[in-house]
Image 1 (cartoon, helix red, strand yellow):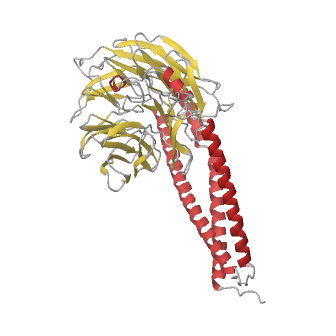
Image 2 (cartoon, rainbow, N blue to C red; image 1 turned 120 degrees about the vertical axis):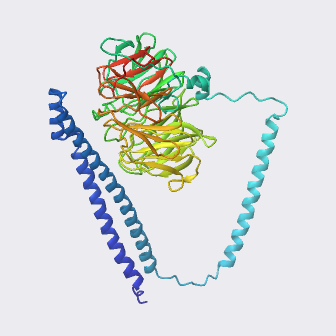
Length: 588
């Protein structure tokens, strides 16, 4: 028999496979080179940056050096953003090339196949009869075995109708949950400051009598000031008479609990010997450190997360209830997303990597045991935004940000409710909910208002409005339900109408800001990096009510309680009280 002729289809498929294979290899080589180059050229170990930092330590008030560092930081951020785009594009090219390669190989293989030639089978009839007889015997034997088994079981087991069965044994999770007091009411939760930027994550305080004036030099309006033994950029959380913060270094990570009345350190607890934690802590960027994530509490336990991936729950007396390691986050700047809680569950947004799929995920852990209740994979890279839990369109939603999506999940089971593909760059500001709109910041680009009543992809249909002036890259927005306020890193304040995004007013503080703005009553609180707090009216015109100095650097956002404000500086905690009336001559 002569070999089958080689068809034109085979030749074309083979050539396509060669081209696709070479293309895939080239893309892979380019991506590997890019990764190796990125790992060997860590921007934060740049000799130029290290030299500038050394100069700044020698001359901490030199604004020229600070400006050079900020400019270099901006260059690094843009370079990192371009690298993310290249990795994302390379991934799509690699996927497309692989699909073409597999398809062409499949076509070539099919084109080379020789069709089989059918042959007569003279024994087919007898063989079918033998198989039929064997099948009948097997069915009869199996039926007899089942019948005998059923008779035996019915003879030896009592009827369920004559005996009441006892309750099933409790699981470990159920037993642990019963051992913990019932969770607080919604009203109690809303009356405290249990997470980053308050109970709803919006930066809006329920109290209307927050202090207006204070002075760090004279001590006026400062109820107490106390040192924090370990560094950390996380903000304080407050429940009743307890205030919690965390701190840490490469050698040790701790939780600190203070009494709110006088600032006494009640206890400090090291979170160590965590199951699954790396034997040696990873090296973390100085920009975030080991304790950048703000803690959270459900009123019965306090939860903490560190840049090592260690998560722990502690009692209000300092005992560790449980601890576990989620894996060291693969994050260029270090993990800084804060924790959230909902109905006894701890919510952890664990975004990591440089492009999706990047092993990012959103998790709900049982607060009493640490058991994973549900976990959802997120096809997005590292982010630093903190999720919020809010009610909108008649449903409770977990709102998250991660390039390129704003995504809403159902807190009960993690089911995705809707998503909007509207983000780019490095997402650090957290979202807020106001007037049924999700306010999300596309860093240094746009402020977006998204209607939260959609389903599926809503980026093209549910963006209510956009604003693009002086958009922050770190701080989150705040709204009183009528107006939206933002403040950029350089201190530029913008006020927009919540209804349509129209600019109402703008003002320049002319100083650096890293803490997110807050609202208490009808006052807007703006905490600057140099320790100055500007208090203004949260209204349709800019009116400065007070300007207060503490003489320490501040990056963490404030916490509020009735008649009080709690601030965390680089080295101290402050409790501000009194001074609720405007000064006789407010600052300019």
